[in-house]
Image (cartoon, rainbow, N blue to C red; front, side, top):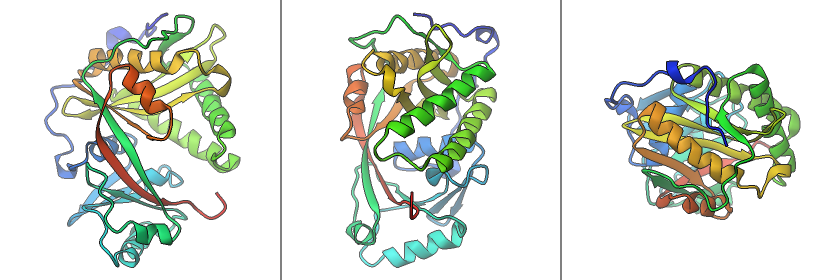
Amino acid sequence: MSTAVPGRQATWPMPAPPARPYAEAMTRSLAYFTDLALRRHEGSVVTREGTLTVIRSPQNQGFWWGNFLLMPAPPLPGDLDRWETQFQNHHSAAHHRAFGVDTPDGNEGAADDFRAAGYQVMHDTVLTAEVTHPPRRLNTDATFRPLATEADWASAHALRMAVNAADPSGHEETGYREFSTLKLASYRRAQEAGHGALLGAFDDTGTMLCGLGIFDAGEGVARYQSVETHPEARSRGLAGTLVHTAAAWAREHLGTRTLVIVADPNYHAQALYESVGFTATEVQLAIQKRPAGD
């Protein structure tokens, strides 16, 4: 197994000690603190209007969670119309609806009003670790490294499309292709600016079998993004090995002290993350309505 970064290790920028770079957008939720930091790295605009936080991603308007409102507290009974009006005022061209809730405990308040209106109410597990350990099934066949070439980025796009196609709840292909292209471009800009990296597990032909992002959020915190394994390459220990490799990379290149990853509690990924040393610490609450036809 190789974790080398050809031609990049000696020159990778090391950040200065963090000084609360996103203090104006601090949240109670660790998940949303890291979300907002990463959106900024990707070129999104985060603004505060009183207690409301508005996130806009003009570079990728099809990215639901790059174009959302962050509620300061769980919704109250009768709040649905007010929040839908707020969303329309701030994201008038959007076909989706997305609201984060700035609470670390998953308290959903009157979210049943949103459910009755066709929204999904999601409770994801926020896991943290200071260090990780190798997975029980350590993969030694693939090469684990940050993306470095045009071919790497093309392979990352192919991986995302394959994962979406195999997902029973996947998105419509044409729209997802556009979204994925723009999303990878934003990751690439953040990587080239020294904020983190997209790492992959590559086979001998240079095909990316598994990938993830890890980016600095300030305060010594780094957040994982988009852990994905090709449907034909699963059950080989790739994801666990890559998560562990990325943790070591972040400590070395970003000065990371706290690692953050978010998982669907109903999916096997949470158990995988716990198996390499992560512990559940918070719950991230999100409320969304998919566009009609998606």
